[in-house]
Length: 373
Image 1 (tube, one colour):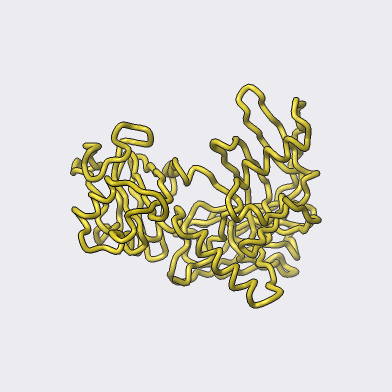
Image 2 (cartoon, rainbow, N blue to C red):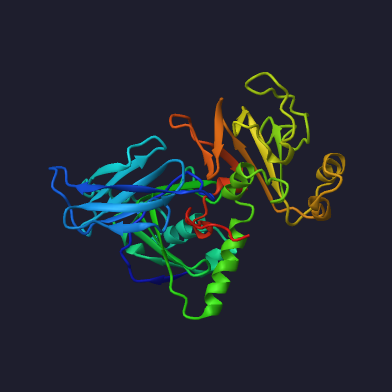
């Protein structure tokens, strides 16, 4: 992978899904721990390209799509950082208090060379997907790398914002408070990410970026959740079954092989068309097996399509499949609105397995990006 000099941007991350709905106005002030207003601080919405700067009084205003809940992050040139989570019932006026940059732990000794550790980090964090081929990583000298030989797990943090350029998708991305851990089997990362759009040198570059963004979105968890919210599961080429879990004997079963029951005791059949009732509420425990159609084959799915969707766009695509994932909601309700899915504030986070287990940074889109199709 190529590398480029550090470009200081600011960013944040979010677990919430954007959609097609009305925008909301968020305003507030950025202050120090002593209560002094901070001018010229960068304020942005986590994991988006939405940003502004504070004025001389430390005030700011943002227009944000209806994301349900999201993080608003403020940073300064000396890397002080403050975060406020905005919930649907939050007051529109925020006060963000900056905290000084924390001290970083030193790297531990390892039998691997730093070059080997960097290769381990890059292959894990960006995977080997097509988009990863065009990643340019910045400031690798500031990465603090630790490796546990007994588990073959690498853990990484950064003494400065972690930056990289995604030339396949047309973004430069910076992650504040970056943490990453795992290996090529499974890993996760956290931090506050800001997406800065690259300037297309030619019109064809923008067309390529638009095309690659659509391809990256297709089959993603965000695509699936928006398909449920819009009641377009079949139209968006998904099918989903309630099952006992990944690796279980019936993790592949159509219809009712799992024999699970919903929170209210009703059988948990297939999610027909991804439709919910008028409350836009989805209730279930256990696991949901999600199929997005692409390359491969599976006769059991073909039999399911013939039985339940005899006239279906999916029936023409049954010879191929590419994305098999699982999600689990604990015993609570997922509620949808026009903008997507809104998780209950105090509920445990959604668990994923399969393809979506990997939060591949090379395939990450800002949540304010919207598919044009």
